[in-house]
Length: 347
Image 1 (cartoon, rainbow, N blue to C red):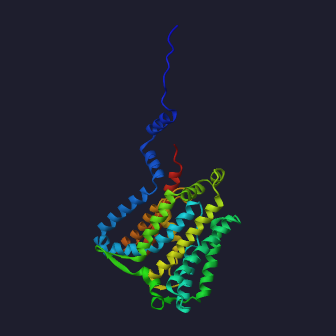
Image 2: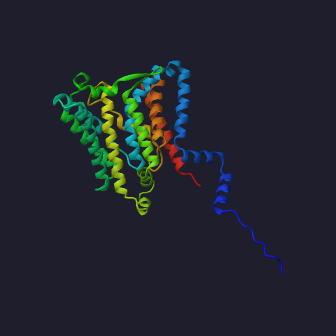
Image 3: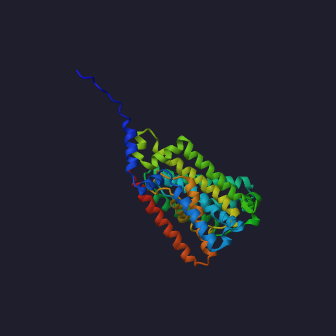
């Protein structure tokens, strides 16, 4: 009888992965790379836009111009962090600006008219932001209303409450405690001028980015946004995760109200009229999927900077403001199209 020869086959999974990798075209490899690293595309856009605008007008690359861009994007960049959390859960928040304005105006009014200390006024503003986020989250999780409808409704509610409370009147910086104006103070970092508000936004990105990447809560946020039913079957308390995302986002809006007072030099009901669209724009351009489950706050920061670069760069180039709006709109369309393409990735 002949000897029986046995062979040891390589692990099927490893061989299959290597075979699939060899079969991919260069375009498919780019697709997989962007799927696993969504911040790459906005980073490349940011670098290219910087080079182009600096070439068109060297003033764009000056420390003064870049410092101004950072200060301009600080408020929208902060709001976009909260918007990122909501969009990661496959939701949307249209009440971003209304919650921020309400928090800002109430904090300013109680400090001006009732002599409330600055610390207490700031805490009241953050508390109102938390309350607004909690209301949105409760309507989404307890009643089961779509996030778009919920936040569209609360947008009107919070806006009306803010206008009724303040009677449409602004509060000037000279009538506010020093602490409320503190976020607008600037200091030198080399040749750059950085405000306290910019520093707070940077810290905010670090904390939220760490929480999303390194905590169970962050993993649950991604899981819920990717597939709610699968997350529920895995033992994740989906409603609790959704509520927490809206709650944290609301707290961020309340904090942003404080940053906005320092940036604007006053508390005005008309301070950020385009906050909703601009925060969504930063998130989408930054590579976070509107369908949830994929993205990062690093991409959101890059998206906010891209919008700031385009506005500043086109302005220095003498381009009409309507063309600047057009350019940002085209960026959003391209970003959504790329996201749709990336989501069709195959193993």
